[in-house]
Length: 258
Image 1 (cartoon, rainbow, N blue to C red):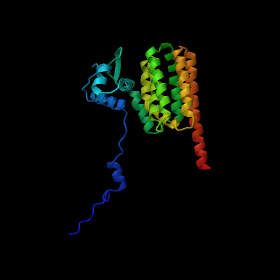
Image 2: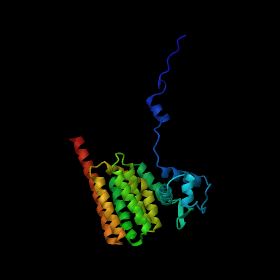
Image 3: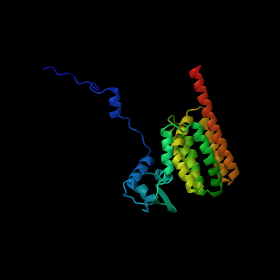
Image 4: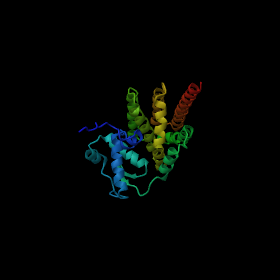
């Protein structure tokens, strides 16, 4: 008796296959840690006011490096899900940051243009750099140095992920150094918008290299305790990056139309 040979995909059209067999998303370790903690909070296994295990204990529990645990905690703090209660200690916050949802909605509707993003970044981050110059700790300067070195190493890789993660971390450390919870929450809410902006510039020739030099200048001003120079360096950086993006978009449009 003849049996028809089985053919891969013969009964599933391409659209259906795309729905069933979705590409597996690559996740960073700190994102996975943050997701686990976020799930415990959302499922009420961790209640408002509950104190999280210390960083050293989380490192042991998750079998992860301290930098991954620290970045996961920073993500949750930026999102308003946890709050600091002492040196290196965090507790579950009793409220959410509503700005997160609003900005995610804007992003999903594509109502936030690249100009909108950079304009908002100039408003928030220039002043944040000035405050960081006045209030930063030696540990935060060390974290800025680590982020800059990660950016330098990331330039050697084609994907850009390591560079972009370090670039984003640099700006979040500055927000943390302001010691202003609203600035930190605002930057946390802007996190995905900023990541999208950074993705747009990594492949622009020489732009990431120029950003690295400008990050070093921002770090130098903050370490020197010079708020005026820190604001100016941050503004120069954001204006230059936006100009690179606009110039590249204009060249692309001209090439397509020409």
